[in-house]
Amino acid sequence: MNSRSKYKTKQRDTLLGYLEKAPGHITANDVCKYLKAQGENIGQSTVYRQLENLVDEGIINKYVIDATSPACFEYMGKESHVKADVCFHCKCEKCGKLIHMQCDELEEIQGHLYEEHHFQLDPMRTVFYGLCEACAGAVQ
Image 1 (cartoon, helix red, strand yellow):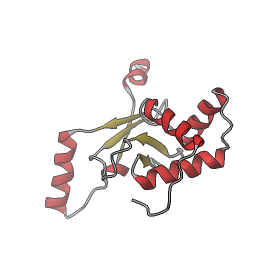
Image 2 (cartoon, rainbow, N blue to C red):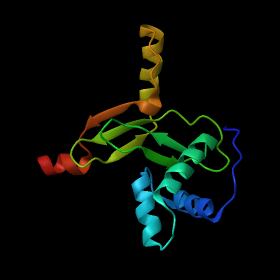
Image 3 (cartoon, rainbow, N blue to C red):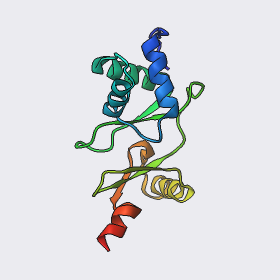
C-alpha cells in the first residue's frame, strides 16, 4: 500500500460510491460521464488522480489491455489491500467488450508455463482476443 496520506473528501466518497456499484470494468471516461450525468462537479484530472490513488491503496485494480484501449478499473473492495486473485481477460475484437475471467484451467496453463518453460505469465496483463458471444452470433 502506498504510504501517501489519503484524505477523506466528498469527491473521493462520491467516486467510491460509484465504483462500488459499477458493473465490471470501467474506464476513467465512464466515471467522468457518470459523475457529470449526476450533476457532480469533479474535474477529469481529479478523477484520474483519485483512480490512481485507489489503485495504490489496493481498493481498485487497473488493467492496461493494449496500446489502443484506455485503462480499465475494477472495484476490489475497501478491505482488499492484498494482491488480487489471478485473472485473465478476453477482449472482443468487434465491439471491444472486456470479459474478466477467473478460471482454474487457465491457472493450470500458467503453472505449466512456469514449470515446463520457465516463463512466469502475468495474468493481470494476459488478454485473449476473439469475438464475444453476441458478436460471434452476428457473424454467423
